[in-house]
Length: 147
Length: 224
Image 1 (cartoon, chains in turn brown, purple):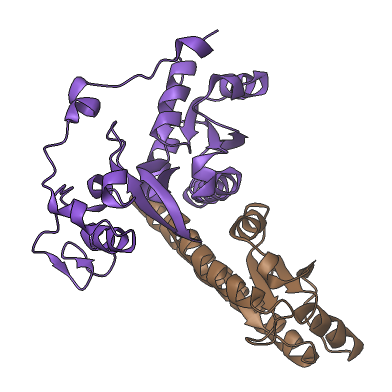
Image 2 (spheres, chains in turn yellow, orange; image 1 turned 180 degrees about the vertical axis):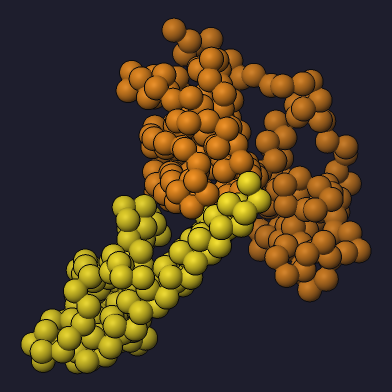
């Protein structure tokens, strides 16, 4: 698959977004297909926002949050964790691979981790896209033979 | 409030895909509070239907619309009527009352329920709702320390407890159900009214309940 996947990254202002900023400052390379949406806290990210991102064409959605115990708003990240788990179930119900959604804990000081996570998540989405394309091609091929 | 929960997604989608254009109607009252059918839940279900349609290759358009109350005529405004007219079918995220009221208002449209209506209950903590009233038509909770034996005792016993009460829990589901009669005893003890529980309570008059068929409440003084 040559197509670069569209990835939306909801990043909390205090940790993951700062880490993304730091990654840039440190001249760390990470995929350009990631669109960062800065949120005041990962606890602001809700089920409807994540699903809407997929409806609007995202191939993958990642949530960047403070580490457990390090949330600026005490437990917004833990709330986000529950919502992400719930949203994965909703995605599975509709036939979207829940692996297209993931949550990562990235502290403000971890610029390189943000870059590495972005690269790994992009690779994951590319792999899922490739598997899906293969499945679709196989099913169409089978149909073609039977006709 | 009326407490409801969403039906399994597949059950809703199976009905949605019979039509090209669906109007998903939310309700801003009880089912918003119990997080089953308010504006946000409408957004979530609409997104789910859109994603499922894309994945499965179905042609379905979903419109979203939430009104303050689906059980009250005054909230069905022109915008609602217009959106309903443009849709092939409705999916109501209101309770059973809302679904039927929509059906009465829009007789020419097929309407599907997205929720299963459960009971009249209270929010005991965020995300947990618990049954408190059975709508029996004749409230008697004052005789039981403010705890309703009809709604909260699994057997609706007026003269309890039964032998299935253990450590304050009901044998029907000891993990989730408190024995209503334990609660009644404790409350009456606090009120210093334990002696009242010595009296045998007579059979309840069920003519106020469903005995006489569907019920209506009429207030002539407030009618227009």
